[in-house]
Amino acid sequence: LSTGKSKSFFVRQTNKS
Image (cartoon, rainbow, N blue to C red; front, top):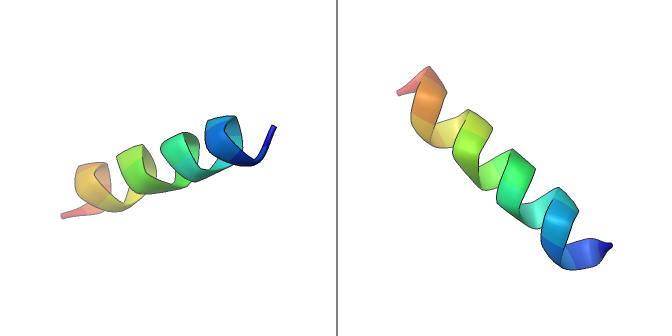
C-alpha cells in the first residue's frame, strides 16, 4: 500500500511539472 501511494504521488508530482 505504501509503495502504491508513493508511486501515485510521484507520478502526480512529475505530471504537475
